[in-house]
Image (spheres, rainbow, N blue to C red):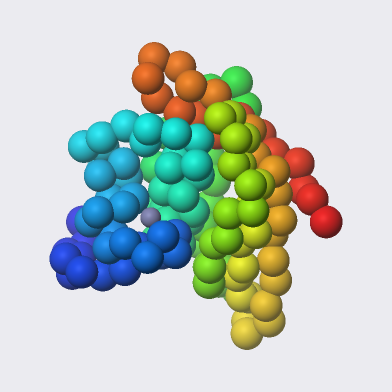
Length: 128
Ligand SMILES: [Zn+2]
């Protein structure tokens, strides 16, 4: 937040587009994410950028935690996102990350809900 971004910086979500043409307008509030997948991608990008406020604001109020902390010690570094499957209101993905140089992956099927033209993350099941 508040950091200057290069215009052609590629988006962390792995879409192949620049950040400015991909997740940035959703994250900075200029546009509402048009689909569950678009919201999921922008939430991944927010995780990669340590943007706790965006993660919380896109979490459905019924399941939203009081707070989240991304200042974990040791730090978690997000590496990549791969969408396996996406439906109207669910997205299955694999996200890879590293902690202290060791690689992990998170494979989850997330559920989303659209209310008042805004998509929200509801919850998810870990897949294996
Ligand atoms: Zn993106």
